[in-house]
Structure formats: C-alpha cells, structure tokens
Image (cartoon, rainbow, N blue to C red):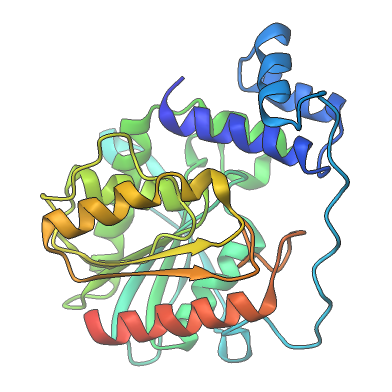
Length: 300
C-alpha cells in the first residue's frame, strides 16, 4: 500500500477502536480498500486495546450555538470545471473574494468534496482570499456520483499518488488564472493535509504558503524544494498523526522555511470539521484565527 492508502486504512481501524465504527462496517470499508479478511482483521486487532473489541464511544462534542469559524462572512461557491493534465476535465467549487488579498486551494478529506469543504472555500472568500475547493474524484464523475462515502474513499485511495498531485497542481494553475497576480496558498484536511505536505515535499514553486491540518508527513519527506511558509495544525489527542510531527518540524527547520506548529489542546483528529463527531468549536476557532493571520502575513 502507498503511504496515503495505509493512512486511510489505519484511520478506519482507529475509528473502530474508538467506537465510531462497528466491526462489520470497518471490515467492509477495509475490504473496499483491497484488504483481505485476514489482513483487515489483523489491522483492527493492532489498533484495538488488545482484544479486538471497540472502546467505549467517545462522548459527543460539546454543543454550541456559535456558528463555525468564518461562516458568518462566508460567500457562496459556484461549481466549476477546468482543465487537468492529459486533456482531462476537473471539477471544483469556486468562491471569489470581492477584493482578493490572495488565493487558497482547499484540499478535502478522504470522502471527497463535501458541503463542508465548499463552506471552507466560502469562508476563505469571506475573509478576503478567493478559494478553489478541488474535487479529486473528478475522473469518477465527481464526489456527488457516490452514494456510499466509503466507496468514495476507496476510489480516492486507489488513485495513483502522482495523479492526485497532478490534479492539485492543475488546481493551483486554475487558481492563478482566476486570481491573477495573487500569491497562492494551500489548506488541506486529514487526507488532504497529507497531500498538502506531499505538495510541499515534491516541490511546488508557485505555492507561497500552506496550512496542512492534521495530515501525515511523508516518509523521508524533504522540504528543500519549496519556499512556502508553512503553519502545521495538529490536535493534542491525535496520536497517530502526531507520530509524524517531529519529522515535519525537523524538515521545516532544515529547509529554513518560515514556519510554526499549532497543537490544539483537548482536541482530536478532524476537530475542525463541524459536520463530524470530533468537532471541537474552541479549537476550530483558534485554528481558523491562526490560519487567517498566517495568510495575512504570507499571502496578502
């Protein structure tokens, strides 16, 4: 398995161990990724407390009447298509700031381009940064063609890494066409956070800044070929992704990039997603404030 495939498989197993997925569903999802019953069972056992039974489900996130950060000023998004590599047509959601200070590529989680990620693009536009939320399932007709989110995840993880990176670079090119003369940033979440790190590690000269949210740092990743100012966002309770944080910090330091790392206290993986079970409003608000400040310094 490629690293991002392994990451998604481990995420499914971790969700089972934390009581978010019943065993049958976890095995089904791992099967869609191509794991046989034996390998899937072994992975569930490795990520469990030792007896292959899920832990007690975590308590629901604290309820709040506050709107998700940035949503009060969010602008609407518009579905668009744009050219990809090899003559392909890609899909995305575009949100134009009235007077853009910069532009941001939004990279979705492993379920594809959802309403949540469209809303994030709209929030960036409301904060003064035109934004394009890419749909990395464009070759399959777009995320909307999938009625089973697990099937969307399987299709994503089955896409070659080079194709994913190529589609992201096409997204940045489209962003540059729609926001000419503006500096470009990239913000990705979970699976998309890992892709953001990969963009940086494989060299993307047109990227001025990046803010990967709780994404795995690539094995032996080297950031010498990028000049992007990078703000890494992590969660204190996200042990799995945090295991690669020291490597990310070391690579940022070696490359001499402007960088900071923010670890949200009392928060777990995917704490920014207000449609998910791990949403943590205080952590999300603080992370959003830091991202907007970061882009204000390095894009505006």
